Image (tube, rainbow, N blue to C red; front, side):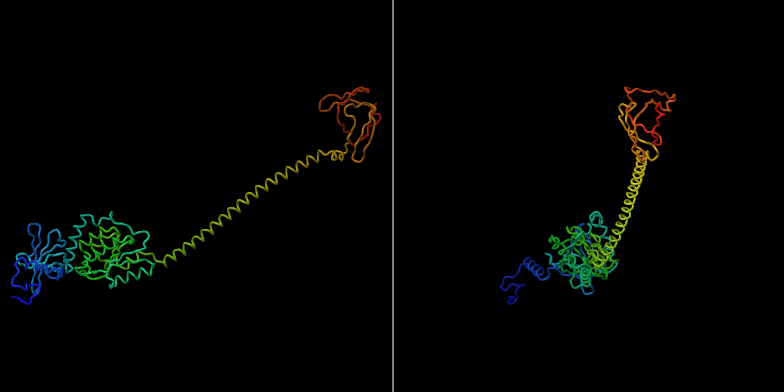
Length: 414
């Protein structure tokens, strides 16, 4: 019997046992619908034994039972709340069809906000958002790992600004969903993949603006934990400046938009060129000023040296002039010009009858000594005594100068 049914029913006469049937059913569900996304309203929410969460997901046309462990509940649920879930369908051993919930995303701005605040407090208590664990941007960025939807406007703007501002950077992109219930798991997988690339300097998670529902994927607990655990620094550029997600809080650097993320990761080459031109101009002015100051300083030093040298020369010249004047005064020729005469002879023994030579300004006179008298200098305060010496007496060796070159008269020797 049941001939012609393949898969669900046996083709022979032996039917399935109940347990076999349930096993085959779950196998087929897992193969065909390993994960399914559903949207609906929460009903009959309850927690059993402090361990298990049960609720109904329903709409106007039907409902389905849902189950998950309490420790996996990252969203504060209540009856009437609209949510989106990622779940695995399953038939229990009692034959009841249910969904095992993998992820929950609130739908509706009020519910999203409440759920976000609940999870934010939980993660903050664990220290995931502490400033102490956040890292600075790398000083030199050569390779950027990007997680985004490659068809999204935010991603295109991000790449455009990177190229316009600097260019030449290497970009490794992991294409993922950036909204919807399946997006968090894909982004987590992208983080894991990029963390295995040692050449990546920083990871950028970017997504353009959208509604609260559109950005709800970035308030996922698993995603926030994966960002905080990343070995490579993470920068987020999600939504607009007013949008703040758990991913932003967990990241090392939060940019207000994808464009702002690109700006923070690069330098503006035009601004850098202008900055370099300004620095060169300032350096030129500085060097010119320093050279001018050095020149003025050197000129002042040279002038000071010149003044010192000139003073020394003037003093030396003055001393030379004084010495010259003194030498000129002591020059025998100057004495002769004043009317004196120089007497030369045997200075060791001057006696009467000795021949002497007299030098005047204009003449050389040879004379003979007729008489010798001893003279006492007036400065001694004594009277002059005249004594005639005989030929055997000696006179001390000296030159005698007579006034006005007058040749002694005969009676002077009497």
